[in-house]
Image 1 (cartoon, helix red, strand yellow):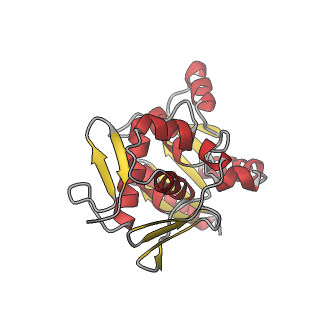
Image 2 (cartoon, rainbow, N blue to C red; image 1 turned 90 degrees about the vertical axis):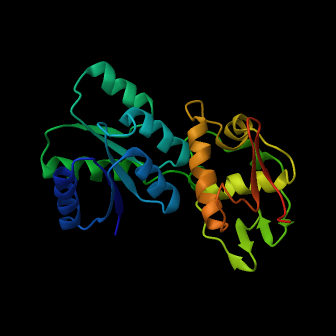
Amino acid sequence: MPSVLVVEDDPSIRQSLIEVLAEHGYAVRSAGDGFGALREVTQSPVDAVVLDLGLPDLDGGDALRMIRGISSVPVLVATARDDEAEIIRLLNAGADDYLVKPFSGGQLIARLSAVLRRTSHLPSARAAHGGRGPMPSAAAEPLRPTTVGELAVDPGARTAHLSGRELRLTRREFDLLAFLAHHTGQVVSKRRLLTEVWREPYVDDQTVDVHLSSLRRKLGERAAAPRYLLTVRGVGIKLVAPR
């Protein structure tokens, strides 16, 4: 059963989209704003995203670029904007297709099905690192298993364990953690993380913040009370063993 994330701030429209998708056999999750969408995509991958542009916290175009920094998930933009230049900009920013509001449930299902057919052939190597661009340069050098305190990261097996318990990480979260583990004790700037892990020209610092927040949660810590991921204000982040 394909899973779809509906990102729409209007509750009635969101519910209508959920009902149409569910009736056609999709497992549906939803978010009412941009950062909620980023959290959903970061925490649990989906097969497609239906993205409204009129979000209360982020412009939909910015949300699209941030999603593209996190995942290669197909994105179908739902927009009331029918300006050709705007649509071209969205497609160039990473949208796989678009629907101009208002649209019928039949149009939504047909476009979504077409997007999923077109994107189902993505090479496994490309999907494995979660991006649409080149593989992270960190993967170009062999990364050895690393143990930091009770945290064990094995890049070869793509596994991470904390106190013997395997962590359930998204592909990008693992790439980020493996890179930091490879540079244990070193302060790594967000710009370097974007260059070495994401290698995407349209990704911004906020994307790193979203992933770091998710990693902290899965490591059982908070930014205000860090254990493994220490922020050096104005400089970057480093992975250390808890004291």
